[in-house]
Length: 411
Image (cartoon, rainbow, N blue to C red; front, side):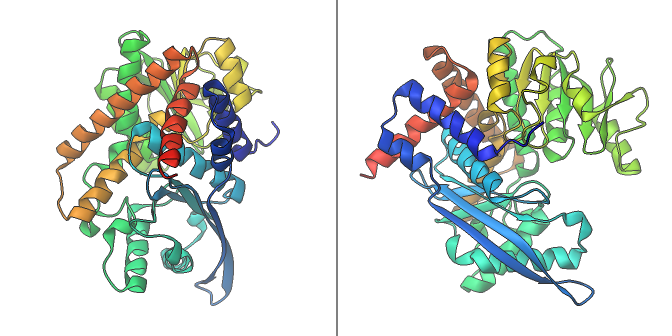
């Protein structure tokens, strides 16, 4: 498969929504270009005494509706086009779920598994030191993403606070609870995705005990699978970067998680057979959940997909060519900007708690999140029905209309 440029994919999605609603071309131009792109060379002293340079990025796409907001990822494939696409999708996602943020994203081109803990901390702190003048609680609020953790966010909050001379927990979300993190944040993205699954199951008439295949068993995939199982769905396949497992009778998510902690992999779990990531995507299930990286569903495999519905928990897992194929095959694709927005909705709740110095229980946080997700589903479904279009285009229409309204209101 040829490499797909994620930013070009994002712009195709934008143009489709803009064409549907006849968006003002001047506003379209604004939405086609990020407000600011930062590229920094981050020097880090390694444990062996040498200095290594890492490439870091932060893209701030649009702040018409509020501060830039979006995660920081550590991955060998991080590049400017990917970060631009992700920052644009964050602007859309925040507008879809209805929180007062714009879109931002960042990352460092690195395999964090190859760094010691000390090297990882020095990298994280130096990166913040190089961009801190461009972020802040009312300017740009980063968060964790692929391969970043609450511990890393804690280092970043501490570094930023030292640089500005006061403890500033609201500068970053996804922090440890001891530094002002929110109860419920860890499971929020997976929990929110299952809320969308529940709504879709009712409105799109999925059978009780519908079967699910989840590609990706990190934080998002784990909590999605766990909450889905608790709601009566049957998870029959799971995978991580090393491969996957399949059991038509269903997998016990807690037991699989324990097995992975013990062995470091999913392979060999009792009662399951091995399955590759590519084969997992093609299993005959009711719902396929890509929860790993982008571009997993493309023109090369879209016709082989046997799922009746696709629910995106990763960012950008479906290319525009695959989208067109799924639309022709009448396979609903519930888009990432809707399904995985529970993470940023809960980040908004964390930010609000930080600014007010008042904290809610996990039950209160997840209760508020449930309302956000249900409302977002209803709004996207209405747009899709009104314009006789896909759920993705419905979500983009909803978001673009909200962002355009804010741009016009600002004059």
